[in-house]
Length: 272
Image 1 (cartoon, helix red, strand yellow):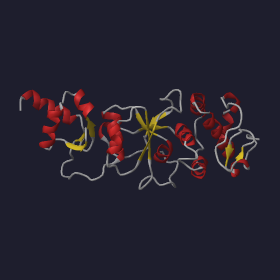
Image 2 (spheres, one colour):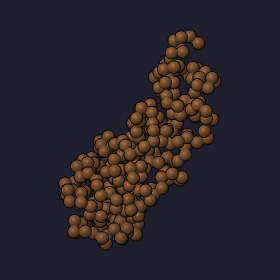
Image 3 (tube, helix red, strand yellow):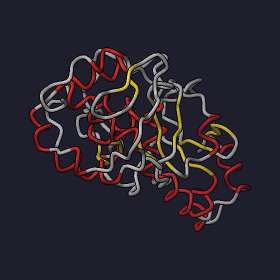
Image 4 (cartoon, one colour):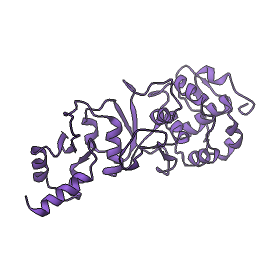
């Protein structure tokens, strides 16, 4: 192997932390052809994860049957630079707001993005993924943060990009009742005592769905956290007319959306 190719291999491998992965598009940008990629796999310098996806082997370990979903998403965000983030109930759980709703086992990971790579669905991950678009907000970048609470030692101080609690709770509401339950969200909402009114206001103004804005105030009035007094529903687009959401439910008197009956019984002074 020529000195140039040796240097190219060295710089490529140094850019990939052991155990992390890249795809063919990333290799192309680093001038690593498919032919060279096959050579690297044959020599054990890269491992083929699935068609078009490779990982850098971890010394002293064999090839894993399943891959860690966090490692995969960190690779996608920080190495391959896909505009993807963790959202919804997963983001709330990772930030400590749903410790009674287990994250792991069969709990799905909510992944948001408009350029999610097709090969993601083929990876043998240790948790199922549910992929979604970012169309809920007119500004798709609003309300994103990093998981600074994660104490895992990661390369180069990488952190998972995810929805802030304010954005994540609206993402969950967008999936009621088909993909999440009112009961689970109600339990989570009870702990959301420190949400930031300014961030909530920006998100609600950017929210493209009347249903979500109305549901937010249904839950906000029900729990009446201190930040609720800083938000005036009349400042936001609540639309007009009734919205049918739950079969067999009741129309909320103020926000005119059909919800489970229990959510119409506990309206506070802010919601009457």
